[in-house]
Image (tube, rainbow, N blue to C red):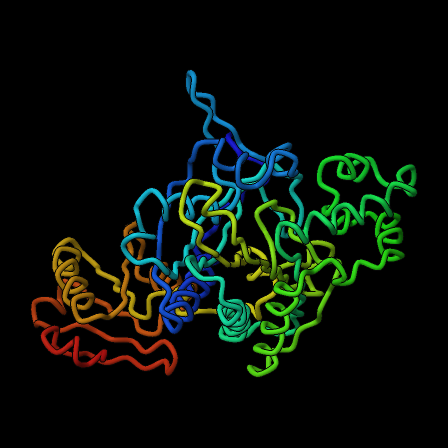
Length: 412
């Protein structure tokens, strides 16, 4: 017997309704801000992610699913931003529209150790706004992330924000951190010793308890921010205050991808345990130009759908409920007529189903009851000859006959 690959998950019918509800709410929320959907391929040139995420990042070093095709090297996308920026440039969206607001929903892939809230095939709901460096856009993006969570009835989350500054500011911050951490090199975990040489900012994000204690002693602050970046961040925080968005400035917050600069943010939920981030994002003002496009700023975020589900109230949605009408057809003529009856009901927007296993009346009634049907339609050859059909109300326990021609109106 074959089994699913570790780190993947079957989304069963009783779960799919929750996914559909989240996706529906996300689409409605994005539309309020005039974001349009974009769908990019699951597979890209591996070099795209090497270039954008950084060769020293853990995603590129350890986590990408690579596909060798003769001389070509492809990768299943580990995140959405790089693909969307590639599409923005390749399809000349900068020339046609300049500033664009895009959202996406779909699977991502990373070769990670499977655990709660972390899979090898996972799903993102995210957005990208490309073509502006305005601080008001940062405010809108973070405010929209909050609105999406609120619309999903998810509470108990925390929003943390920070500014990494421009490229020069990040370089200053990296040098300062490296100087401070060199003294503690022998006390860092093995991964952080490598990060010290290749990507020192990632040490700030390490979950190792000893590394966190070392980092807590360092005054990161915002001392490396230039006046322009400090002013930009002040505008973002002021904008969030004006919207009533509660947030915490966390100077040690970094994002693990090289393309981030200036505003970065993370949204966490305590119920998720060690993997407590349900969403994160930030600004990437240099990414478009690095890939051969114009000098266009951008900012975006992504939520992990699996983590949204873990943090959500988990209310049952209409999509997960059984068809409210269930037809029991007894006899060959009744079954033939039942096909047309079901078709007419569905044409009127009435959700319905029937038995395809040839069960007895008693067994079919039991199946309808177990499935949660509100009404059971009973059609035998005798009823059919008279143009009637029996309608049983499973909630009230009552049963009556009605004309088949009047059935749609009766059920409505």
